Image 1: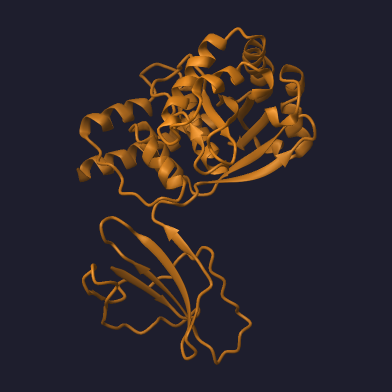
Image 2: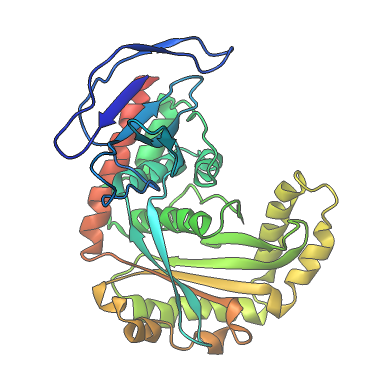
Length: 360
């Protein structure tokens, strides 16, 4: 167990040695401050205007037991007991993406994504490349879990997925990475969502992503959300061309033979949680136009931080998918120099996989 202490900008908490008994099941653990740095505190507020007579110590406890690692932040008054202001953060449960909601009136609604922690995001994409989608989904839902082991052969396959083949353009690799980021964003938007795991091959011809929209009971299917994820340097032409064509095909029923088994497979997995779920009835409902929702996610640049410019990207969305605006979700992330960023990001993910492999 490691303990970090801090009391003001210039004074470090005195070193000490104590015994901490956590429960009858956990043995006593000796501790001492081993590093003198200031913890990054999330969800903890310390009022700097309080009288100087009250000293506030920020102490970070880290318990390593059975791979369950809660991080507890405490604000303690030195002479006046303990003031508890927040928060408990699960190990690995950080949110690597920040989603900023935005609406373009009746045209569409959605969010802008920004990368809050690039290393953490690369780590979660690396886990997805290893086929560990269930683990990543649990972490994003706030469940602290021990990460699965990383076999050498599994690591090799994941690294291939994150590597551009020799003498090939990076488009397929970048497309897969973006689909993985989009999958993470979807879980960030709706914890515990029922979303199909990312495909594990480049340039898969099926749907980029697929999500079930459920009622509050989790047993009635309201809609299916079909993802269109595009890592592109030309977002408007890509949307107006490939994306709108794909949505028109779905709206006209041309791809219902693909949509129904995709939905059925995901429903069967969900039925393990809710045995009374009527799969046939849910599939029949999907055939109705209003039950099909669309989520278009594209890479953009900083000019699309302007709401009007961003709305222009999705012009025509209400024509190809008419009806209530709830059917039309629009997601963007600004990544200048997209190909360069993807190269560095993928290398980061590969480095993490190699480190995990070495630990096996």
